Amino acid sequence: MQDWTGNDIAISCDTYLGPAEVLGFYDQGRLLRIRPVAWNRQGDVWAQVAIPGAPSLRAGSMVLAIGGKDAEFYVIGLLDESQKRGGVSDAIEFEGGVRAVRAGAAGEELHVCAESGDLLFSYDVRAGRIEVDAPAGDVRIAGKQGAMKLVTEGDMVFESGGEVRVHAARGIRLTVQNVLRELRTSLGLGSHRMDLHAQNLDVAARTGSMKIQDAAYAGEKVEMRVKRSRVIADQIESCANDIVETAKNVFRRVTELSQVQCGRMKTIVQSTFRLKSRRAVIKAEKDVKIDGKSINLG
Image (cartoon, rainbow, N blue to C red; front, top):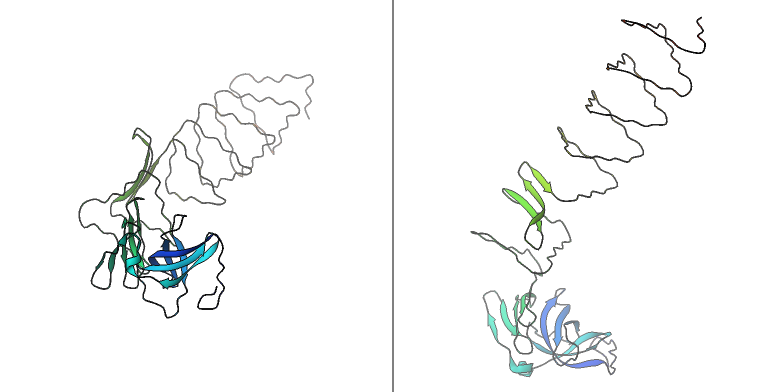
C-alpha cells in the first residue's frame, strides 16, 4: 500500500487501521498528535498527513489512521464527526478562531486550540493531567493582587533552552524542610545581602576566584590540604595560645629586622648549630655559661 506521495506503507498483523482523534498540530501543521480510538495500546502518537488536497482538520476531528508499534502513523482519510466514539463532539468557538473542544473517547478531555489548530491547553480528567503549550510567542501568568503559589505533592521541574531568570523587588528565599516541616537548609537573596544556612556545604570547581573586601571567619576547626600555598600581604598578624609547626626544611629570608620577644627560649639541634654574622653581640644581665667537651676560640 502507498500513500499519496508514493511512499510504501507496510501492513502487518501489528498494524492499526481505524479511527483516530486529532489532538493538535505541531511543526506548522507538518505533524499531528492523534489518539487511535480502537487501538489496544493506550497512548497518543505522532502522525503525518497522507491525504492529498490538505483537508480542513482541527482539534477534535476524526480521521482514519494507519500505523503500528514499530512503524510511523499516517492519516489517510477524514471521517464524519458522527463516527467519533461515544458521539462526543461539543465545541465552543471564541473570537479570533480559538476553539474549546470536548475530546477523548467519552469526552473526558478538554482541548483549547488556536485558529491554526495548534493545541494551547488540554485537561485530562481521568489522568488528572494539565498541559499548556505555546506554539509561538510568550506565555505570561500575572497576578495583580495577592500571592501566587504553585503546590504539588511530587517533584517540580523547570526546563529551559535558554536562561532562567528570577526577578524580585525585595528578595528571594529558597528553603528545604524535613517531614516535620522543620527548616533544614535555606538560601536568602536580598537587595544587599545573601545568607546561606545548611548542615553541610560542598563546593567543587575546576577553577574559581573570590573577591571580598572585608571577610571574617568564625569556627572550631579549619583543615586545608593543598600542594602549594602562597600568601601575599602587606602585614600578617597571628594570635594563638599554642603554635605547632612541622616541616622537613624551613627557609626564611628577612631583608631587615627579625626579632623574637619571649619569656624563655630553648633551641634543640640534633647535629650542628652554626651562627654566622659580620658582628655578634651576646649580652646578659647576669651569668653567661658555655659548657662543652672542648671550647675553641679563634
